[in-house]
Every structure is written in structure tokens, then in C-alpha cells.
Image (cartoon, rainbow, N blue to C red; front, side, top):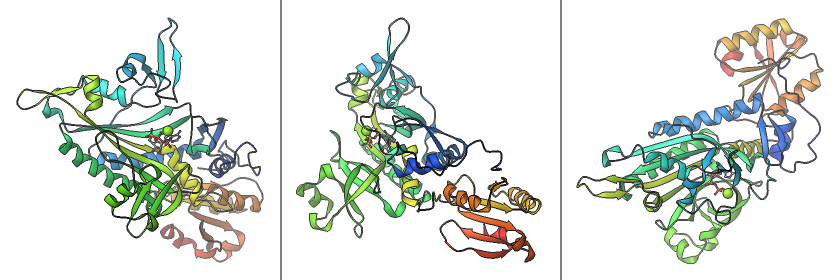
Length: 410
Ligand code: ATP
Ligand code: MG
């Protein structure tokens, strides 16, 4: 990717209407475009990060047998009425609209009921399970507050997965595999040190549900953690009785700010019973399906990573999700830089090549703002020594590296 061709431009001005650091940086660097509060478009660089995060999540969901599909944003009123969740009092984030004939429609804030309804066409027998499906989907929620940049959107991307099982035992097997898969996702995103499987309030069927909370100053939640024991507890389950069950005491826990980057939930059989999703067991009996749901906040994760990893010079992307591995800067040596650009690209290394006709100082500042993991500079001075100047984004000093060594280094 040549920066001279990229339509987005960087900006030195911090957007006045953004208090969240993630949104400020992402807008200034040209990763997102703010349409209104809580509603962001993803421009090529931002889309690239988003797709990279999605691909990691996709690989881990496929690895535990998830089947990808995509549901719709327009939803039927009747579907949600079966569980009493069409009501605006019960669900306070609904956006709704109408067909020309007056029929009311809901705009997808969740797909739990919709997917259960679809499965009534496909699950009939105990032989049809276990099965689990997932999607990457734009969710529309009329959130009261949207002040955390892309960490809380009124339109945002979620990965949501649903498991369908014959009983609690079969459910539990997948539920536990999903916890392991989620841990791998956060590990691959470089968040594992600060991400906790957190005990939260359960539904009618389980004592606890599990949230995945990442310690983050810009988060909207508080959790109580004990690093040594690897235990984290949500505020809502901080009773002495619960803590005893989890083997910790109140004074062993530290209160920290966090962002919920995922959650998993055991619905038991209630929703399927209400919605009429039954299967025939081995003895011919009709039994309600056991449902689980598993969310990951894809756009929120991008915001959390931006927040946590950025420094005072700009964004810092982990290599696993950066739009490119290398940020190549030419200072008056476009021919040599183009050669290196081609060589790296042909070796399968993604490169952002700053071939713009702007001052060196601006190129350096933009390289820091954009946040690729490796910066490589070619100038007359470096070429005299058959070298390039190399700096990792997280380092402050650069070093000279021989031209023929740089490919291996990055
Ligand atoms: P929160 O408590 O933050 O509102 P939630 O309990 O409503 O989250 P779910 O409906 O279970 O969340 O959604 C699954 C995941 O989607 C969450 O764990 C979070 O990572 C993400 N998410 C939820 N709401 C938003 C939002 N408004 N903007 C961005 N991501 C969100
Ligand atoms: Mg919510």
C-alpha cells in the first residue's frame, strides 16, 4: 500500500468532540470516520485491523467446530414477542422501524431469538446435535451513553456464537472448549496478560456466567482481581458467600477498571422451551434444546487495543492485527525504496510505503501515529552504508541494518 494513493489523511488536530483516546487516535490516523456519537465508519486502515481481528476469532471458532453464517438486521416483531423481549421496557436499546404497510420491524440488537427460530427448521433429533453456529454481525443498539469511542457503539460488530445441545452435560463440554478458544483469541491479540475470565451473575440455570474482562482505564466496568490466583470477580457477585465458593477473600482482591471484551452464557432449556425448539430423544420423547450464547466485541477489542497499547506518539498495533508489518519511508530515494517495497511485498511481508512528497519530519510523525510494528527508512545517508535505518514501533532509538538483512528482521 502506497501512502500517496491512500485517500485518508492524517490530522494533527485532536477531534474536539471526542473524549475517548481510542477514537481520537483512530480518527486522527484515518482508521475510522465518525458519522455521529457511537457510529463510526471504518476506512481502509481501520477495516484492515478489523478484518485481522475477525480472522483470528474466525480461526478459533472454526477450530472448535463453529459453523459461520450471517443473519439479517431486519427482524420480525413476532419472533421477539414469543420471549417477551419486543417490549421497550424489557429491552431498552431497541431501534425499530416500519414497513410501508405499517408492519413493525426490529433492527438487530441481538440474534438470540432469531437463531433459535431458524434452528426449528434444522434440529429435530438428538442426532442433529451438538451443533454450534456463529456470525460476525453489525449490532444496532440505542445505547444511552456513547462516550467511549469505538468501545461502545450504537452500531458495532460482534461475533456471536450459539450452541445447541441435548442436555446440560453435552452443553458443558462445548462451554468449556469455548473458554479455551476465547483465551487463545485474547492471547493472539496480545491481551492475555490483562484479560480475566471473570465470574459474573448467572441466569436461572447456573450460579455464574463468565465475562472476559480486560483491564483498561477507559473501560466502563469494575472488576476485582487476584493476579496470583488468576481469579476475577464482577461487582455484581461480590458477596462473601460467592467469594468463599471461588476460594478468595475480599482483602485478596484489587479493584480495577476493565472493559468487557466477551461473555459466554448458559441459557439452559428455558428459551428453547418457550420458543418451541424441541428434539426427539432416543426413546422418542420431545425435549427442549439446551442453548448457550458466546459473544466477542470485535470493534470494542480494536478500541481496547488502541487504548492500551498506544503511547504519546500514536497507535501501536500488535503484528497480528496491524494493517501492515512494515512502514517504509523514503527520504529522497524513491528508486531504492521502491525496490525494497517490491522485494518485501514479494516475500509476503505487508508494507505501507510512504512515497509521498512531504517533509521527513511529517513522515516520521505519521509512522508513529499509524502504528505499524516495524519502521524502515531509506535515505542517501543509509544507502552510503548499504543499509536502512530500522526502528521497532515500541523502541525510541533506531539502528542501521544492512539492506540484505532487513527482510529477515521484519
Ligand atoms: P455491556 O455490559 O458492555 O453493555 P453487554 O452485556 O450488553 O455489554 P452482550 O450483549 O453480551 O454485551 O454483547 C457481547 C459483547 O459485545 C460484549 O462482551 C462486548 O464486548 C460487546 N459489546 C456490547 N455492547 C457493545 C457496544 N455498545 N459497543 C461495542 N461493543 C459492545
Ligand atoms: Mg449492553
